Image: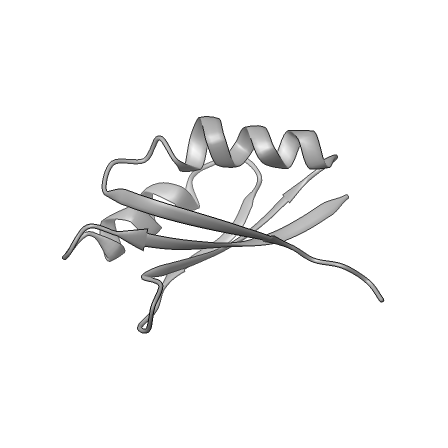
Length: 77
């Protein structure tokens, strides 16, 4: 299982709506609106890196109000 944090920038005033919409996506375990350089931080999981990429590109980035994403896979050192 691959886990990742997805850092999201949104249009002004859209963070809460984006977090709510993303929470319902399969593969998303949590989505919270935050302050700072990013507006929403998502914790996601998938069976492979390819599935994770598909989740981000096909589902997360399709949510209205998102302007940019940064995916940070979790590594176990």
